[in-house]
Structures are given as C-alpha cells and as structure tokens.
Length: 498
Image (cartoon, rainbow, N blue to C red; front, side, top):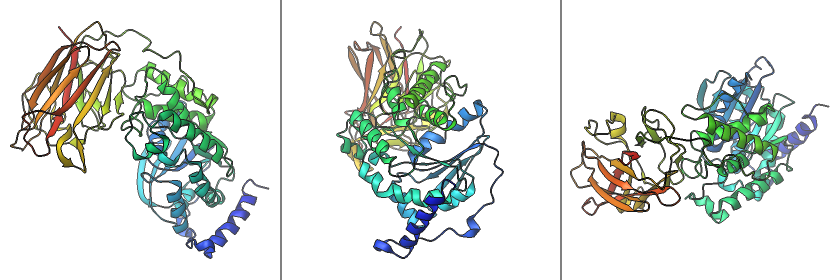
C-alpha cells in the first residue's frame, strides 16, 4: 500500500466532516480542476515547497539555490509567503481555500518569480514536490499548544494532495531573537534568548510526533551555534529577521544539508562580500546543527577572525540604502540587532572591525540633499538616504530619543578618528544632530543636518574601552528646534588616528 493511502482515507473522512460544518467549522471549498497543472517531467531533482512566512523567506529564498547550483544538484524552491503568518492563519486559509499567498518560485537556474493570489492547493498542484515544509510564526515557535492546535489539520489537508506519494514532510525549527530584540513576542520568553531557543527546540521536537514528519531542519540550532563564534549575536537585521549575509547564509546551509544529505562544508558558493572564513564559520555552524540538532555546540575553533588584519585605510558606512554603494559598508537595517561583521575598508579589504545597532532608529529617510561636497566623496545615493530618530514629539507612533551604534574588534592600544555626515533637504528649521563617541574617553560634536551639503564633523582620538569597543550615540543637539527633534545620520567614516 502506498505511503499516503491510509492517510488519504483518514483525511478524506476528516475533510468530509469539516465540509458539513462539524463543530462550527466553515465549509471548505475543494480545489478546482482548472488549477491542476500537468506533472512536469520527474528528473529526480529536489523540489521543496515551504508553507511559511518571512522566516522561510530568510532561509530558502536567498542563498539555498546558489549552494545547490555550486554542488551540481538540481533544486526547485517554492515558498508560500504571508508576512507573519502563523499555523492558525494557514489553517484558516485551508478552510477557505484562500488565494492569500505570495508564491515565490525559484527554478534550478536561480531565476525567481513572484505571483500573488495563490492558495495552498494551487501550489501543491504546481510541482511534483519532493519535500513539503511547515513552520510556526517566530514568536509562537516555542509554544507547543499552538502547534497542537493547527498542525494536524494542515498536514491532513496537505499530505493527500502531494502529487509525489514519496514526498517527505519537514518542520522548520526557527531561531531565537537577538538579545537586544524589541519584538513584542519576545516577552513570552522573558526576553531571554536562551529561554526562547530551548523552548523552540522542545516545542518543535514534540510537534513532530503530532503527524508524520520525516525531518526537522534545525536552522535555529545552526544560528545559535553561529552566535558562539566570533560572529556573536550579530546575525539579524532587526533583532529577529536574519541579516542578508551570514545569517541567511547559515540558515540556507542548514537547509542544503538537510535536503541533500550532502555536507555543506567546502561548498564554493558564498554571498558577494563574504569572506571565505565567514563562509567556513557558517558552514560549520550548519553542519554541526545537523549532527547535534537539539543542543548548541560551542564553536571553539572560531573565537577570533583566524588571521591578522591591517586596519590602515578608512572604513565607510552607508546608512539607509537597501544595497550599499560600491566601496561602502551598507547599514541596511534600522532596528537593534542589525550588524555587519568584519567591515571592509575603502579598497574592499577586511579589517577585523565589526558594527552593530544596539538601540534602534525610528526608520529610513530618503530626502537628503543630492549634491554634496565633502571629504567623504559621497555618491548621490549615499547623501540622499539616512537613518533618523526623533527626540521630541512622537512620529510613527513613537519617540526615539537616541540611537546607539557599536564598533568592536578595535585595538585598545590605539585611537581612532570617527567622522559623521547627515542631511535632510527641503526644510528650513534647525535639525541639529549630536554625535557622541564613547570608549576609554569621550567626545561630542554637532551638525545642523538641514540642507547640509558640505559639513562633516569628527570625534578624533577616541580610544576603545578594554574590550576594544567604541559606542556612538546619535541624538538631537541642543539647538535643534524642530518639534519632533528629528536627527539624521547618512554616512560615517572610521580610521586610525594619525
């Protein structure tokens, strides 16, 4: 008897009961025949469909295809995406056969298409999926009762509709938030990363016994492994979503090894701008997670950058763009938890210096001046974008009195010059911004960012603290007379003091 025969009979009875309104459930429309697409030729490739949200986007949409192509493994990826979707939302969509999903499909050459209005039934009919994955929304991933409530119905609906009767079913073990995360759901775990991680591991492990699950993809453990390395807790863009480089790459490495059974160690694919050493750390974190998925492995061999760095040329940071300008390190997030490990200098060489946002900004502003004349030699795209806060009246429903940046990996025996630029065009009030650099010593400088085209201000001769860190606090200056007290940072330069 085929794998799904008994399941199909059971699921058919279950669906029949649901369709006549048992227990007050809504009638469930069955997929229309017009949605059924003829089977593509089965060439033995791997075809993974995730029923997910932004965490599945982080894990499978960005680097997984590149890893598969580098290994010569044909892979098709489908992600049924709704931002913040919980298992309960997926269940409700099933009950209504709702075309509520953004269907992101990546073919074996890495080409991505996005189509709105897909239902789960329609996506199941689109490919002869070899693997189908479920996951809970991140804040509920460690809450077992939420799995128990919705996973059985989702599985009972999905399994009989999988055209491949040998399809494997997976659970995505998601990751704990950054220690500094401000996500409202973090309170369920006492805002403790270790508590959240352990709760997720326990809940997912228990949930796999609710239905037939072939494998858990331990992305959460891989990320926690990564955090024990020199990378530290610098793997998210906003405190919960993974950062575009090493965070997403580590999750993708975990998925690659789980799907293929092939070790990811030594895979030649890595994101643009990532060093071979960073790729090695990520691959080891993922590989170890597959070997020991239920507990963290301390990455004892990766506690430093594994080499010497000669930081002699300036580092430039670009705030507020989705893609950094050439020669600049892109600060593409504005929430606490965003980080860049191992910043590059102006020539593209790694420096061993890292950066993080420890206290958030309000958001991104795209209305800076376009033409500047400064020692930064900024392209227009850098000058026009900034991160901003507001120390006065509320904006976007909040007051952000100050934002805190952290530079680490600096030499405590040396001192550094840190310079700042910010601008906001088409305003006539004073939007003075204060920049304070704090290490073993401290200095504050001010710049009126209103229509600023030329002023760069610097805190020179700042010595790191004993841990090799300098904190940069950005806020409103004393002459700022805007009602919201908006402050801005568009660009920053760090270099050894001369």
